[in-house]
Amino acid sequence: MDDESRYEAVHSRDERFDGVFFTAVLTTGIYCRPSCPARTPKRENVRFYRSAAAAQTAGFRACRRCRPDTVPGSAEWDVRADTVGRAMRLIGDGVVDREGVSGLARRLGYSARQVQRQLTAELGAGPVALARCRRAQTARILLRTTGLPITEVAFAAGFASVRQFNETIREVYDLTPTEVRGASGGTRADAEGVSLRLAHRGPYAAGPVFDFLARRAVEGVEEVVGEPGTRCYRRTLALPYGHAVAEVGEHGGPGWLPCRLVLSDLRDLGCAVQRLRRLFDLDADPYAVAERLGADARLGPLVREAVGLRSPGAVDGSELAVRAVLGQQVTVAAARTLAGRLVTAYGKPLPHASGSLTRLFPAAETLAEASLVELGMPAARRECLRTLAAALADGSVVLDPGADREHAERALLALRGIGPWTAGYARMRALGDPDVFLPGDVGVRQGLALLGATPADARDWRPWRSYALHHLWRAAATGAATATRAG
Image 1: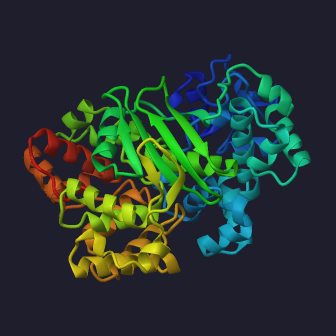
Image 2: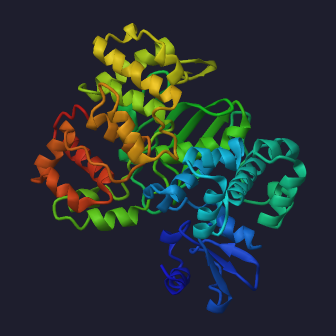
Image 3: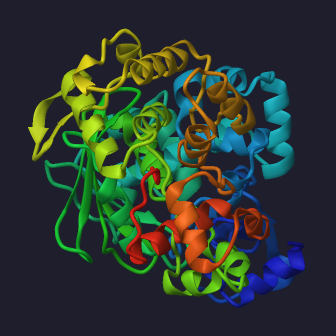
């Protein structure tokens, strides 16, 4: 987009571009999302920025009316596999807060100077400014949803000092922390956790997403409770500083899903939110997906039937890869049973059970040394699982949010017992690749047959073939077909 087309999007208050760019107004010193309901400023008074951090760095403060810091993230960072895209995913996961810019650069395989230069060139802000913007948003959530003392909020949000925290909140919101806490619109949390809203862009087909997760929910780690339309997905999370129990509701409001997080360490709040966003694919651009897939004569009816269908990701890449190996050559139900046995035998117990949630998914380091005899799998499959776990533990295979997708897939395929289906499935869900196709999957073949299509037709569905897979799986399921290797 050029600036003139951006201005047209602002003039029409087009919510499709919320998070894609930000509008700053020179006369007010405020930056907004494109869909802000305020009167459209004159063109000569408007500047555009690729990130909220860039607008903040330029001296603009967040609009209190449209709250631009709460919009869905740009779908560009899910699609892009280059250094900037990988860096944005890692920053969102809190790597800069935990490991500094040097840690971010090390994970990307570049020098800190190169990372700074590339991010500044594309986004108008470097990794420190981007991480600062993330910390400010986390602080605002804590201020509005908890009764924590302000000093504790500062350190829980990742700030190095109370002074830095106070200065940042005033610069970003033009309010003191006390004023942010007292501002209207916040939802107070009780002793059971932090309540917040997970924003998404455009229509969201929550039903199929919850169906997908419910069929794969692993006993002890996950559960889906309630009736369709009002269900709640619950799971345990292993996080950098501790653990959490997360709840996400199927029914929220226009543009958001309800969420509650019970954290053992509040410093994990931002990281937990980002991991849930990846699991529910909340930063996707459903308009772009529908435009491409909906135009296909065979796939179009399925797209129109499930408007806003997402491609669920994962909260942890290592967990997803282990579960993919458990799902090789067996049904979804059988894979779920195997995963439940694995959790019972090797998962770390929670200090206190939360309903049926009792454990964390086993760490790769634990599985690398495990006998796995409890699973009742063939010896070759057990050895494949241990080999994968060892590679994840020693860093030979990296499946964190900023991993290089091509390199990760090659590393997985180099492991004995892992073939194209497992590597591709891990690439799609663990690494959030929107353009994966699994022609050998039984459910995919059944879906293609129902449409009268062939694997070669999938070329027309690029770069959104991962979403096409989910439409094909749904077609196979509603066509009374039994999908066996669909995850």
